[in-house]
Image (cartoon, rainbow, N blue to C red):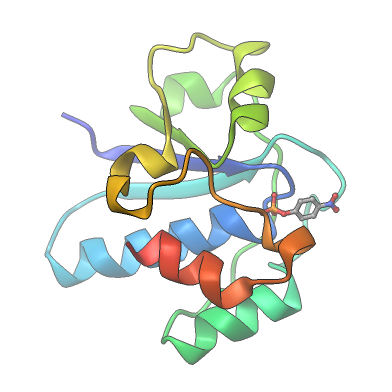
Length: 137
Ligand code: 4NP
């Protein structure tokens, strides 16, 4: 059974920590016992909390990101998680260099109604509310 889920983006300060917090809240509300974490393929923000504007957008919708800290994904994560959910194809490509691809899925595969092949990076688009809405979908 899939009960350990890792969300992965580039920096681990915008998309994946938001996916972690939203999924944790929704799992809790449904009484699902899931292990949920997030990580980035890059190393620039290791140890840092989620990006301020992303935290603010999440807080406005009731999600508290303050306790999260960025970390870099590693090969060991492939043994620790049943499902690794990436935000875009660059994330998937980076993961394919460090582990098997069989348990890696795109986040947007779970939101077909959005009609997107990836979760746009709000660090660049600045659309933090849009990112949050897509992740909630
Ligand atoms: P994320 O966004 O991958 O959604 O956390 C980014 C945050 C920071 C950077 C890139 C993406 N950066 O290059 O610093």
